[in-house]
Image (cartoon, rainbow, N blue to C red; front, side):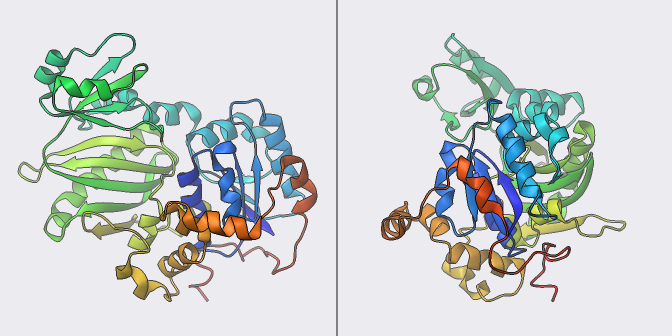
Length: 387
């Protein structure tokens, strides 16, 4: 039976959410997405998949599809995974008869997803960000002026977090040919120091739970409070609701902290936070009881590494969410294929010829299916570990 509907256009982000859901429950998931993530139908983490457009043309189809699902499942949760899904769900939320995981309103998400507007918001409220300049459009960037203002090298990033667009490091005028010919870009000074990240959940402006990664043992105690204050302040001034990922830069010589980037929705390496000890998807769907303090995890180390690296094999049998996540990723050929260039997926697809569920067929297939029925408490987080 379907208990979670994951909506998303970005395939890596949608897959990460599916993996996060499987790490706290065995409940079934359905994916509603665009053509770009139709391949998720091959994942064992996805019970059903439907393809629609997110540009507004299929809003009525989306509403009817979701509301039809509620006729068969009392405890159904809709999880928008990326900015495209959040925009669509916000447009039609008043017509959906389903619980929706916390998400920001569209103006807030759009502001934070826009690198230039994000920088302006931070400066307005005294939050530290690097020197930057808006460039692009039809004219060629003024390299001497940028080099003088930002120093060399500097980074040029797309104004929004589109997965197909990459940041470019500019060390000389010759590097400018690598920039997109059209569109607005943000040129950003490279702050000296080390990278850190803050992955968090906020409830209408209040920081509720977060994971800090990238700090070594010596720096964790020193810089943790500053990163927490910056994250809490950003949530407060933006009245943010839902999941957010912040990239930060720490100058270990001076102690200065700088906010570099903001992703105001789920992100591709979301599962790293589960291995660190906090499942942010589960926190959105079934928040843990909170008392006087935040739920905090500090992951020591510059990077968490690949979840299926040999160093993590000892956790495969663990009953906690990290163990469930590793098992979900190990026994899902689609997840494995994403890290092996698609070889495993192609082989499995050729052997099984699994059929594609077209949109008109989704309705009749949504009724109860063999397997355990989902009761009121069976979808709650940590159901395996809590036994």
